Length: 138
Image 1 (spheres, rainbow, N blue to C red):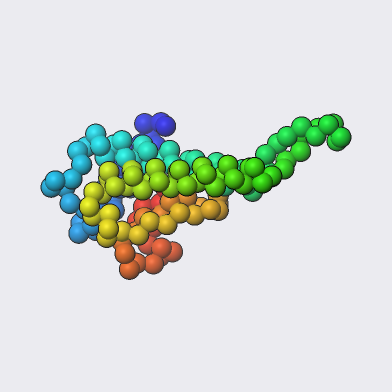
Image 2 (spheres, rainbow, N blue to C red):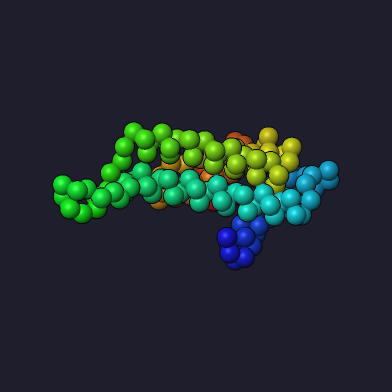
């Protein structure tokens, strides 16, 4: 993860905090290094979800001896591996969000997307529409 990506995510988190101060409580919350660790873990989880979504769309290149070239395919084993990886990434993202927001995470909605054309993780205040309010999209 680059320093620019980390700073960009931290900036998005703090813009969300500025807009919705009731969803974030600095007193008794996590420290700055813990928040930074949470941001890095959140980026990692989103990247993992994105990689698997792209693999599912495009297939995985495998050498086909009959055709004499590489062909993209998607098998049941690939599907099982993807589901396991997605569950692990979603758990990692929830843990990272808990580090960032602490007990105020209960006031937020977290949505995981399976389509690689958009943000993989969406976080927004409860009761607000996602499409009209991109508070924090990773």
